[in-house]
Length: 206
Length: 266
Image (cartoon, rainbow over all chains, first blue to last red; front, side, top):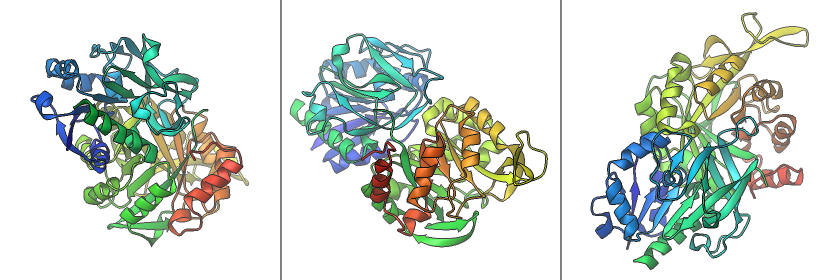
């Protein structure tokens, strides 16, 4: 059985993610440290809830061990805040990001659109080879709930975009790191498909 | 393509059952929350709102077990409210599977709670519910005039039972500043009447703030939903009896809105 760990910052709902992974055949552990992750897990998820600084404080406590997971090429899925944390810095907080992906996290443009961005948008898939989107049709509806968006230095890592007044990266992918600004665990059947794909990615990387 | 308008079925729960009232009174049984949630999620609801409507006035905790049971059968966003008084209550609800918490009475009593919740859970997690009723006395700040009468919009707490003398427009602006991520705007005047949403109230609020607003109270038909999207800048429409009593199915409503040029998730 595929074993996936969800890192808990203690700031929000991970129950839905857990249920979705279980429905797709994974054995799930909720962790707040990365002890033994390399030996015991086939994939790691940084979930999408909370505020930048408090979440970084909790992951910084075990940063070296987390970086070790990445060096060992364990598949990582970062959702929303879990995606933003991997960048160098964010306008939401004053702490440094994890600096795993080059680029920064910016506030959505104020006064032009309502913030937070809450609701369903279409996905414009720009990299059809992404394993996360296997069987996901272009223009599928996915659920966003965020006030910040990422700006990767290397635009080639963007696998899908969405439009909310401005075009924002909906997902990025580099090596074995998969990130979504939207919430697959909340995006109905199509999101469930992506969770299933991530479980498959973990199986193949084993 | 931009953001789709959201259709949100609302489960008002009392003693473990979904109920529906008129002007917040005369509660009628409408079914089992878990079964309804499953059905709505499958039929294309864009989100689900669950309100434990008597938790605040009975000074008790929200029913966490039901929240958990609902959360485990759906894969769409889930907002839960009713009786959330502090950080711990909010955390417990989120741990039970809610994505967002809705606060109402507690925010009026202690506005700093909004800020506190926002700094931990993020703005997107905090929905502030406004239960609003027209007041024909003259204490309000923003006075409206219709049919020969002056009135203003007042915030009510404890399930609509308690007056606060707080002007709803001023309050909406304040909760936005304090860190609310969305406003769930319910008109007690139109609630349960099935005569349509309170367009006047919704416009009064939407035009003065820059966070998303969910319209609630008064939906009796798919036409009412179309109307609220045409007449206001609201982001989502909440409905209860329309779906509970199967006067319309979610997929039919969404099809109808699409045909009428409202952008809807298909």
